[in-house]
Structure formats: structure tokens, C-alpha cells
Image (tube, rainbow, N blue to C red):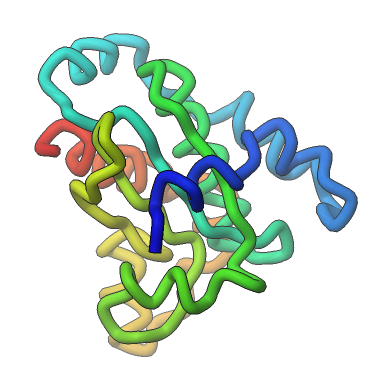
Length: 163
């Protein structure tokens, strides 16, 4: 698989929002606008090797509706090139990155300037994965309403800063 070619075939966040199969573009626009990310994160870019982020996502997916706008905003602030591909049609490509051999979305692949894979973030923050593992689904409404945005932001910034 040629990751650069795959990345180049992706679309921008704005194109993703405007794509014909996105039935709820306002969800992505609104979340992008309201998510609060401190501009002081700009200093992370100086020490990070991340130049590109490739996302696999679908507009109908609640996890994508939560995390994709956050990743897009982080990339916009840091000047990181961000591209999105649909999961549908790219499941085989995703298998390279998925630990449990299931194409979960969103999947964010952190890449350096030469398109080497530096790190990967899959589907949900750790705290939500732990709750699901315990059979606790009480998080759902708060999750889609932004109550766990800080955890998502922290995890994504950690991936960027240590890569």
C-alpha cells in the first residue's frame, strides 16, 4: 500500500462536510465551531514530527461526529495537513492500522513529512472504551454532547506531541 497515494486521494474536512452522502453537515460544522481548543497548543508543532493526519470516517457514525471535528480543529491550529477517506471501500487499507483486525471509525493515522506512520488513534478515548468494557452505556448522551471532548483532545495532542 502506498500511504502517500492513499493520503492524496483523501478529501479535506470542508469537502467531507459538503459531500453528498453527509446528511447532517451541521453536526460537523457546529462541533468544529464550539469545540474549545486553546491556541497555546501551537508550541507542540515545534517538537512534533507529525505533518499529516489521515482519517477513515463516515458521516453517519456518532464517533466520527464527535471526534472528526476535534481532529480537524487541532490540525487547523497546528498547520497539519488533514485528509479523510471513507471506511467503505478502504477496509483493506485500514487493516494495516487496526489492532484487532476490525475496521473501526474514526481511525486517525499520524504521519510524518515522508508519510511514515508515527502513531494511530482508533474510535474512542480510553475512558469511553473502559466504560463500554464494563457494560456501562450511561456515557452516550454526554459523549455526543461534548462532555468527553477534553479527554479526546488530550489523547490526540499526546499522540501528536510524542510523535
